[in-house]
Image 1 (tube, one colour):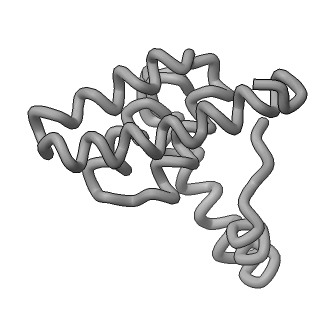
Image 2 (cartoon, rainbow, N blue to C red):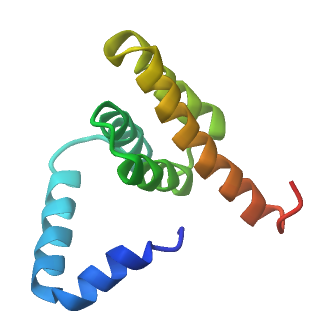
Length: 113
């Protein structure tokens, strides 16, 4: 699993009850239907791109990779934004996906990309 952002871990340590409730809500939503981890992460990636949430896009791209998605699947998910939210927004989302892919490839190749 990817390393959690410091801001997130600090929040969870500062507000443990809210953190537990948030984690439980996320688990309940995940368990409410038949979608697997990879599919949910790709959907959430698209939602984050559509909402212009860079941190969310990075997070869900990492989660999708951790769940077995390929870099090309992440790119394809980002491309889906083109006809819904427009070329500039899709390009922004695609650049966020590329950020995560690059860091992932650096970490899995020992930094030699």
